[in-house]
Each structure stands twice: as structure tokens, then as C-alpha cells.
Length: 199
Image 1 (cartoon, rainbow, N blue to C red):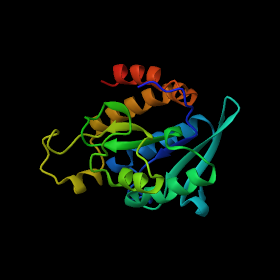
Image 2: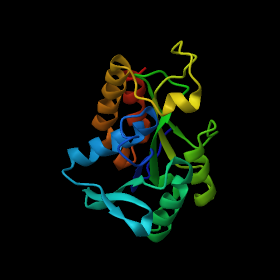
Image 3: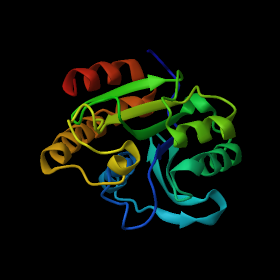
Image 4: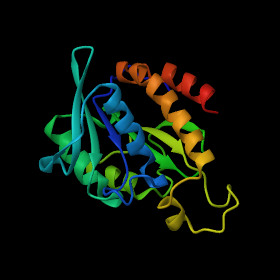
């Protein structure tokens, strides 16, 4: 999982609006907002790109932060528009998103591959014409793995328990700690650290 291609766009997937802000489906946005705070920037609405955006400087290069505000299932509209405008290739994009197949407290890095039924990722694939973007899969668990009598659609639109939230937050902190390596394109090294610290 090595890469020497620096990341130029970081996307946090979720749904817009205060009623969704603390729900599991917005785990990718939690990371994006934490990254923005770390760099003292604010995500601001930009209608050209159908989302809230910020720009940070890293090693003299611009890196864009994007929260598509089109609702999850149309995330590709925002990502595709920004990537086309700034000529950003799929392998220069990192997408942070919630992952049902991982427990809270786990994060896995992945490039390409199956999109596991995630509609936001499917829409990105459609708009980019490729699934060769990087993904930070933030574990939120599955109703079955957490022994909950709840449908998936209902589960992702509810808040995690306090214990689950703490586990998710801990791993978002780990991802933040190693984001500098990711931005440098040292994703293999970052992945080793992240997978070890959020197993």
C-alpha cells in the first residue's frame, strides 16, 4: 500500500444539517472538522463546488478540505466538480467515511477496491470515473456486530453510545496524528501506524 503521490484533496463524507451532525454517518466529517481546527481554518460554503470548503498549506502546496453538502448519496457531484476545476487526480484524493464493517475504535486505509454498498462512494466513483481514490474507513460498527435490533439505515442516522463515540474519537485522533505522512504521499508508512494504533 505504498504511494509517493501527495494528497491534494481531503473529503469528509456525511449529511448536512444540525440534525445529522452527531450521527454515525457523519464520522468522516468529524475527522475533516478536526483537521480544519488543527490548521486554524474554517469550512465555508462554496456553491460552485456544492459543499463547505477550506484550504490549508502543506509543504508549500495547497490542500483542499471538502464536506459535500449535497447529502451523502450525491457526494460525487461536489468531489467531481472540485477535482475537475483544480485538476486533481483520483489517487490525490483521500475520502474519510463511516464504515459498517469495522468496529468503533478501528480505522483501515484502502485504495480502490469494492465500495461495500456505500452510496456516497458509489456516487464519487460515477463522477470521477474511477475508484482509485484513497479511503480512511472509520469504524462505526454494524447493528449485528453490536447486538442491536436496528436496521442499518436507522443505525447510521443515530448517535453512537458514549463508549462508541470515545472509541471513534480516539481513532480520529490517531488519523489526525498521521495525516502529515498522508499529505506527503507516505501513505504506506501512515497506514502501518494507523492500523497498529487502531486495530
